[in-house]
Amino acid sequence: MPNKTEPAELPDLMPGEAAQLLHVSTKTLTRMADRGVVAAVTLPSGHRRYFRSSIDSLASSGRTS
Image (tube, rainbow, N blue to C red; front, side, top):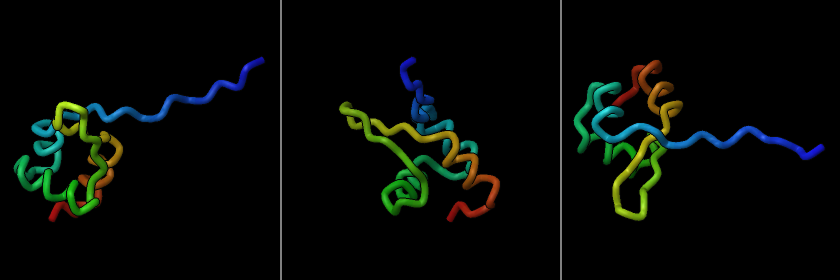
């Protein structure tokens, strides 16, 4: 029987959605991603997508700056 593994989490939040959850602007969210505070993936088009788990974790900790 083949070994099935769970698929890795896909980045599913667009910048506006992630920023709204954190109560910050999209520009602040971009800076946070650049500093490594929040996990993001840059698509070939140059747009970013954010991991819900990273955003939820940061939102629950209250650390958004």
